[in-house]
Image 1 (tube, rainbow, N blue to C red):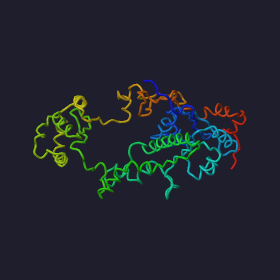
Image 2: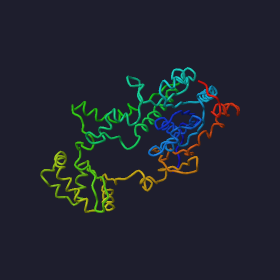
Image 3: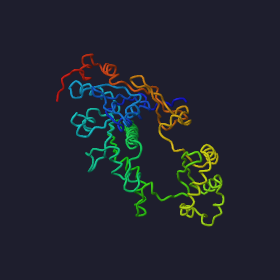
Image 4: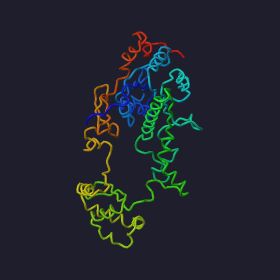
Length: 396
């Protein structure tokens, strides 16, 4: 698949962040064509060294970025960052407000020094009573009711990915695009602040609104009140799990016929949508029994042919074997600094039938671009060594 044009080509993004929310914001801007320069401490971003479930954080969300190291505890390091920021269109950061101010990079200071700079601040909360609290994806899921809605009653459960961090980064990039458009009109820089908590709040808004309208709370998803006759997981004859849904009257008729349950269509207790929903306690066991007599492959083929919503119950690792994931533009190859390669998805959209892949999706070694970037700013080799944190005495 051919690549789409890069709308942000020619823009420079300086990113100073770690973990997921800030890095994903920078990565999304890079996917759109921006040059993203990641500023790391001399020892490298700590996210590089995570293990376990954190092993995929740095490789996934830092694809295609340049890496430089600066020791911001030294005057030379801060001076180098100042030179770099003067060439930037966007600055992405996820520091605590007081930490950013202590480094001399509070939003008001940045706006004064770099009048055309777009600042994207990826924070736990927007301005308000909680703005100085420490937040993480799991924290805001617990705070907003997301975890309550995901697990059964009394067992709050975080969802199975860092969805808030990733979506928060996406809103950061979205805000940057809006600010860049505004800059074309007024010629000025702008400050974009993204809240992880507010992101999660938006994700649970449908449940909030239901309560505001009806005056009653929705139960957790495992105990939800169904709006459809069939919306469940079943087991096929060969022991595979499959999700099946019938969310329209036409799908109800089709699925009943497909499963050999055509007699349900004439049953007097199943003639309306609410009849079908209220009768789930005795119809779903019949559906389960029917599904259990059919092999997965045959059932999946029949459902696809008839337009019935269905899905296998897959694990993330199985996505590497999925034919749709492996279509042109579905996965992109990246190399780690040690030469190991991995595959990961890109943007979930196409423009004019073209993917938004980057030419370079590799992960840079810590500080791999320090010399090239700082030389282009007019710094000498000695200045670069000093600013990058190689054996230089630190100052307060």
